[in-house]
Image (cartoon, rainbow, N blue to C red; front, side, top):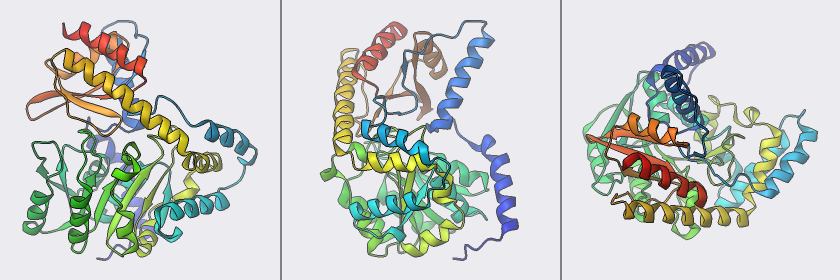
Length: 389
């Protein structure tokens, strides 16, 4: 596959991205930009109605870490301000070394980026900038898919299983019967369902399929799994399989506004993709320095994982008491069906000071609520009772 592209093509495709993304982005894109769009939608709606904008007591539509960044990251961030006038050449190399050591790969297998969303966009451009097809299973996180659609790529998808997980067998069958697929996309744990694939099944799928077409696995929420429960897909990278992994600091590390992420892939593929990505040159030295401190702060990650589980259980119990079912989640959000129109629900919750995100699929309205603090989940449940009673 020839992925070469000259500067003129790059500029043309960049223009396409700029003009096409706004039209192509779906309503279910819970990145930071989607959160901004969500808030703007609330602002516009209440302005249209001539109502005062309510005070938001619980912001639960962007899957952010309510506990913020680690104290060690905060300290490193403040100290790094003194070198904010410098590019992050040295610091970027240090972070790659740090990640490589933990993952058992080499620094040349790592591509740093300003949040994993940048890597998703880069992959869309690299694999489908001249068209083609991407295979996935929906509902899932649509960022990469929407970017590819803006490049006129075709998205081929199969329904998920009754357990709301990727149907790997159906995906293999679709791949075998469909020409022109250039990339397979999997989000694990999946957004918006919060479900995971059994590690052995996912590993076997990646080994088999990547010999035919590259497999991109978005692991934005992998840190909410205990280390022992995570699939070790980085091992596939060292073994030369055509697998790309995406990670972000936006979730458990609390860097949603600081913007830091990274990809892992075979060195040859990293080098090729790098031609379409600015890497650490798009990331501030302050962010990378704080990122190194956070990456090593296992105590903070354990704290956030534990607090997330506590708050999630509060939500589970509250929904059960109110007679609502939910999809068991391995992330910092929970998906559950609601019994009213999505926009009506969103606006009424917002009137009660709670931001949520909703979507219709399978002819059923659903709410995907982020996990906040225990207090914020109680605020959510109080508002939910008022809105649904």
